[in-house]
Image (cartoon, rainbow, N blue to C red):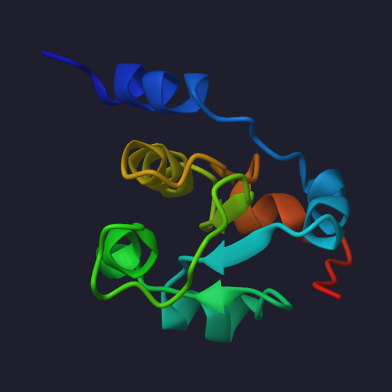
Length: 123
């Protein structure tokens, strides 16, 4: 049996995670920003400028290259940065996206809360 801590560590081992202060540069360099947070959290805490909002329960279907329901065509080497509230579910989600062929998938250390106080522009 695997513990949740082991599962999270294994997911993060394959990610080139983004520090909050580096997000703006990553976006300027062409990264796609995905916000997984539920509508209630976005209404309470604010939007993430320039992010595509995709509910967590359909993320893989919306981004996987093999999915007929994808809404975004991701370039093979394009970075896809997933953001959740605290940076836990986004790590698991990014690892799943990598397994589905979105090789540049990663997340932000600390999630949205790690970004609070930083000005994030999508350009």
